[in-house]
Image (cartoon, rainbow, N blue to C red; front, side):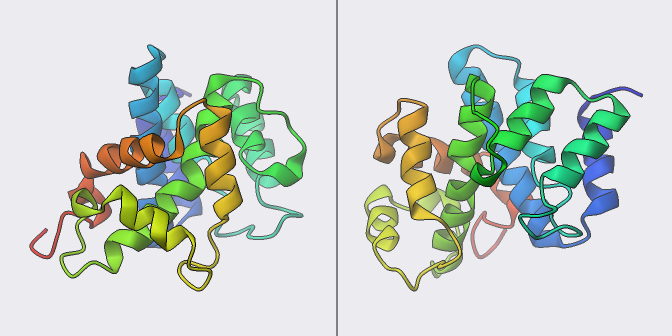
Length: 190
């Protein structure tokens, strides 16, 4: 078996039918690729980790099963251990330390991509590129807005990678904007 993007996409699609969960995976992939470029790391590997981080979630949405089932499947299939550990570390409840840049960046972008998607979807044009950082910061204070997104994780994620929160928001927004048509966030016409 080859451990490339095509294999990762196939695995994601085998386990995830929900289009929004697939789009979340694509958003995280884009943000991870951008961070890999920023840090001079392997863009393909980082993108694959982003793509796979929640592949088991649709079938295993609880803390007792999500990540654990996925990690077991990835190990059984022989995916690189560093990738599996990074995926395990993206959920605090696993107790797996985020002891690599890969793991820290995955944690940093996961909740943020979801929040940025929510911010784009309430815009009249539904365009991620038009989401302003100050608007995101304001929305983060609104408890009722995207209530399932953990704001503390967003803040901690930026802190763990050593990037000011506002800068990280803009960075991830721009990474998502680069693949906006795929995410359904290119604007009213796209």
